[in-house]
Length: 220
Image (cartoon, rainbow, N blue to C red; front, top):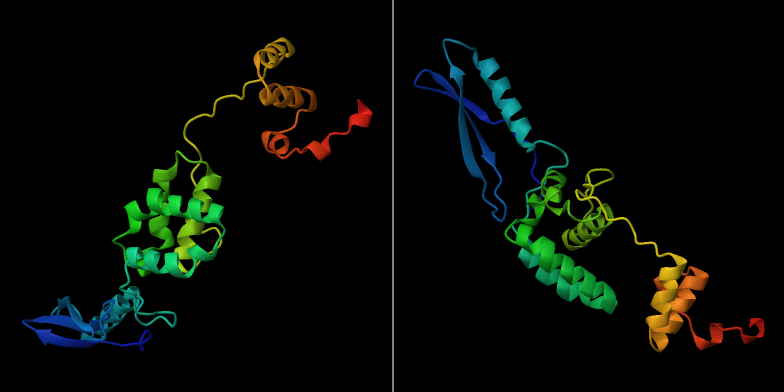
C-alpha cells in the first residue's frame, strides 16, 4: 500500500496540557507508528486552538497531501544492482563505461546508504557543490545517470549546476615557425597528421576520421 487517506489526529488533556497524537508512516512497514506532541497548556489555550495547531503539524509532514506516498525503503545500492541487470547491459559499450564510471566515482560514495525516495532535488543541490571542480556539462551527465538509476527526473530547473572554480588555462597557439619545427621533427604518420592539422585547421576528431578515400589527388 503506497497511499493512505488523510488524518486529523486526536487531542487529549494530560497533566494540564493538551497533547496531540497522530500516526506516521515508516518506509518499508505496513504498520504506522504513533507520534505525539505537547500542543500547549489548558490555562493558555482552548481545545479548538489545540486541534488547529495539531492539524498544522500534520499538514507540515505532508501526510494529507493528495500526492503523498509512503517512501520506499530500497537503498540506492540495491537500486544500482537492479539497474545494472535490467538497463545498463542493453546500452552500447561506451555508454556502459561512462555510466559505470559515474556510479563508481561519484554516485556510490555519496548515495549508497540512502533510501532512493530520500534522494531529493534539495539533497542533490547540496551535494553538487562537491562536483564544482568538474564542468557544468560533466555535472549534468552525472546527474542524468543518477536520474536513470532512480527512474525519475527532478524537474526543470530544480538542480543548480556549479561553475568550475579554477580558471582554465588558455589554449596553446603555435606560431608558423613553431608548427614547422614540430612537423619537421615528427616521424611517419604523425608528420602527416600534424601537417594536415596545420594546413586545414581541422579538429582532432575530424583528423582521426579521415580515410584514404578522402584524399583527392587531382587537386595536388
